[in-house]
Length: 156
Length: 148
Image (tube, rainbow over all chains, first blue to last red; front, side, top):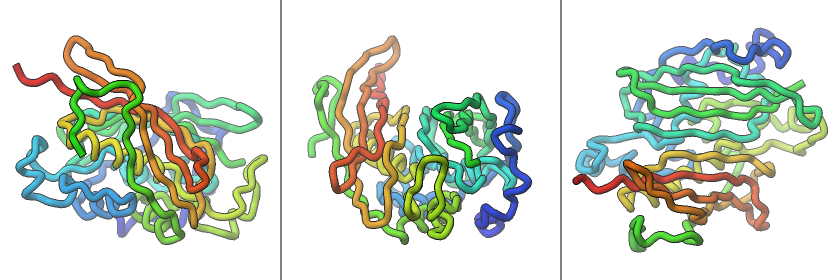
């Protein structure tokens, strides 16, 4: 997955919806993503996460979690992993103003993660163009991992 | 450090997370690990431009990097207490740039027992080396009732 990921966010810019095109309530296109231990641990290292629940298989097996897990904030990676290159969240200049997330169960290495996502609202405030996005991540059993909203300021 | 218990916790209880040194390398590592390659975080030439009324004057750290640091602080504290991190809401108030050192902390705001569990609400912040608040928000941690 990571190898095929387009890191040049300008490349598909013309195909992405702008603020005017985004319809609140309309689902965003998403795709399943298999979460690997390598991806979890790379994310952990990037924010200084070093808890043994993410790195030490023996410790994790003996813990209440029964095995290695991902930190709750793994949805930061999943947001981009589960959406295609023309998703408007990738539009260069998109400013993230804030997010709120609720957590149910942890994601685990080997999980196939799916995303249900949509724009929930769009508005103009202080001359800025805002879109609120609404997201639910589930595992391969349909169990909710986490759900969350984000406030983005759209580039003009 | 002694582990928190729900009974002993009271408003004003403070949690501190470790400091995090922000650099171009840390921002690139976060971009690669989160797959967020927005040029706001990577392209100096792009960041010489203005965004509406705002000119950042150079690349900025991903706002969600703050979110990751707050999560680390909360989960490290909750795991040790046998508690579960259930919610985090944040707003980004100031841009964070390479060379900054940021640090998360939390202050317990309230406790609540519901029909099936026990909860604490924590005000959270991330401050930079000038003690400016760069992110703020609120978290909720569950202390499950002991098995009957």
